[in-house]
Image 1 (cartoon, one colour):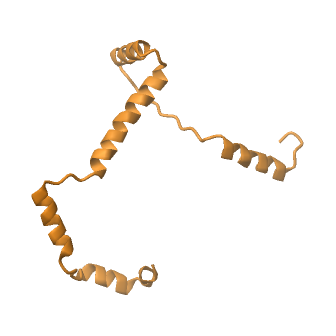
Image 2 (cartoon, rainbow, N blue to C red):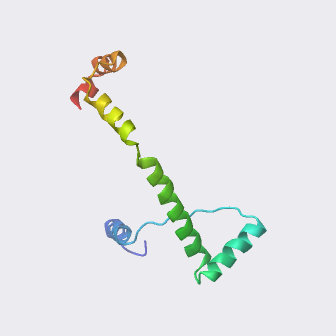
Image 3 (cartoon, rainbow, N blue to C red):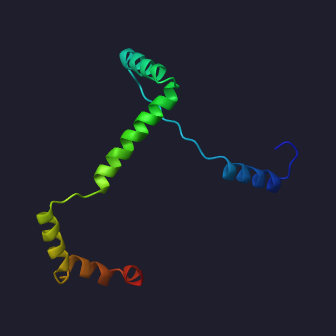
Amino acid sequence: MSGQCPDAWYARLMSDRAVKPQRHRLEVRVTPEQDALIRQAADLEDTTVTAFVLDTVTSRAKGVVRRHQDMVLSNQAFDQFIAELDKPARPVPELVDLFKNNPKLREA
């Protein structure tokens, strides 16, 4: 701690963390052919391998998440969905029991 009191050291450590975003490392194993292809593509895009991989993977990940978040329905399916939502709610016996037997859930 180089002569600093523990409180000052801890405060400096915390302020450094607040300023600098935390980074994580991902490691993957690739074949020589995959490595060559990725490096060639990065070179053709005039970027680093890291930037190329991050951009490509992040873009793909966003698309996957988006496809799983959005629900696209035909007009008929949408009308049926809304009709089901408009029906009166029916108690589910398992949920009724769960809330009866767990007072903490009733408080929420």
